[in-house]
Length: 148
Image (cartoon, rainbow, N blue to C red; front, side, top):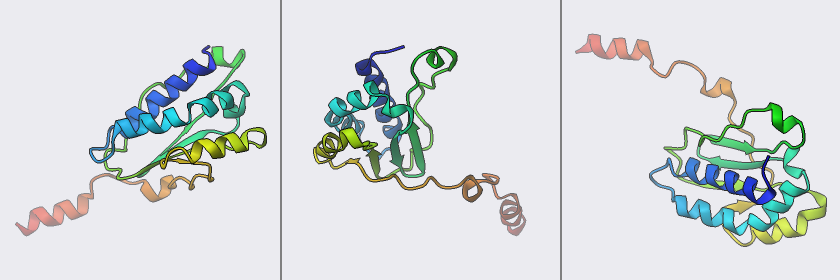
């Protein structure tokens, strides 16, 4: 159990560490974007909006949704506090903030405070079917070896 400020700090850290895996993107830029959204982010947490509507980080093929859990349900779940792997090849990132009715104007103001923030609906994540399959094309490797 954390305060809204403490929870925001954890989310901001996870976003920054996930983005930092890319050699092209700046961890500092992610920190600045999350700082620009901090006040409204804490409100979203405190009002329970992040239990239903996630903050979504889109960085290349990485599509992370950050949600919160409160009450007794928080005591039974295990947190994932590790950066999400896979953004090493990302060349761009956007942090999508939910925009529930009572906080829409505040979210809009925060979004206009930093170019990496958005109140738009995040793009759908790539389907697992499109990215599933072996990482090594064994047949192509076999052909390359036999051609030598």
